[in-house]
Length: 285
Image 1 (cartoon, one colour):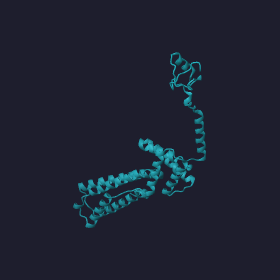
Image 2 (tube, helix red, strand yellow):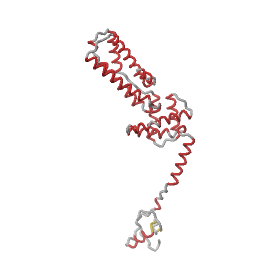
Image 3 (tube, one colour):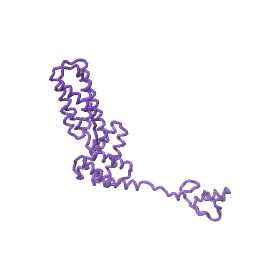
Image 4 (cartoon, one colour):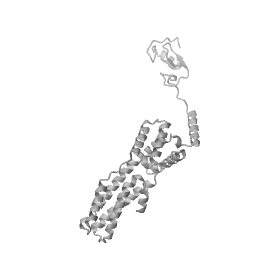
């Protein structure tokens, strides 16, 4: 329980922390009553312990994630926290209060706790929603510029309350970028695609790359452009053969064809231009 409470210092887990603290208080009161465990009570407490263990596992997983990862996945995490809270409350409802020798105050406290947890609403902050919307917009537009990525990274820093200095921003970006290996290892294709898109989006920001990394990226880009053969212009292709012309020739219609192709065309008694269907003068080639 102490481990859970340590990691629940994060803002997004505060509500769950409050509920777990209330559960601990109630369970401590139950233990003081020295109640003999019936089969139904044992089953109920086993289910409760199992659900609380799952909540702990969720918290432990989140505690190992980078802050940017938690932010960009806050909707999913909030939903899982809400589900976990309700499952714990349902486990509490299994405790047979009516058959236990408990005071009215303890029973009322248990009932109130169950009701609060069942109706619990976990929501993301307005700032977080704004960042998620900006990320989604950037991914949809695909070709966002550097200033867009810079503004997005600054907003993330503001939401996480971290420094906007270049080194601090780069560290947060690198920590988030390192999460991708774990995502791929879990074979979660949808999350992997989303992560790749967000990494590419944030990677356009100035702080995402060091001067050396930018130099390497520039050199690689330049070399790739040099090594790639240029695609011939459309006008370089012969419309008869579909290939790039080696011996182009102009006709009386003003169109250009591969010499051997147009000569064969005319030799086959085709006197009209293959493109615009005007009469050709065989003498003008």
